[in-house]
Image 1 (cartoon, one colour):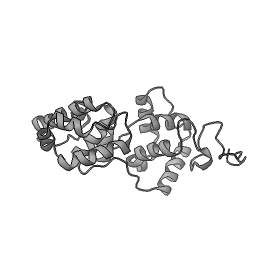
Image 2: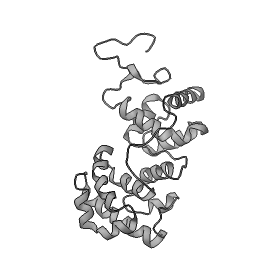
Image 3: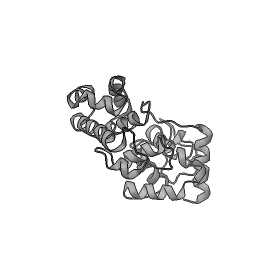
Image 4: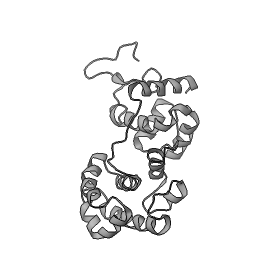
Length: 221
């Protein structure tokens, strides 16, 4: 995709929503980290329902360790893969206390050393909390990168590295949220809603989908 088109896409995203926000609930770096760990293969809505009660009892690593694995497990049992996730939350909380003075590390190496924290989770924390130019490639972002032609790649890492190269610096901080939200609500997996897409004129996806029960106007395609 030409550099000018990438610039136009993010300029349009910025016009629509200058300050995009993620949909996970959190109050500090620790609760953000825990929420992202719990969100793997789960919806943000489902995670928020569970963490509402969990974070009311434990908003720090010390409080989380005090709850214990069994209590954490009980509180997050509505989330998929909850047993393994509960163990990871307990263990990473203990590691934060032992290795980082109870603080969430601001570097990738420190984050990825924690159980349940991979590159995607680390990128979310680095981007949202520490305001670093990181791109967390989930299924939505992977789809948008490939479908639009902005960052074609066979792996999440390939898409991530390409996006880091092509996204204009002024838009880098919020790019993660713009792309994920676009993929979640407009550029959907099975039925992308091209007829209401704000970046359709620059998108390389063909054929673009028409509105329900209505052909797509020629000037839109």
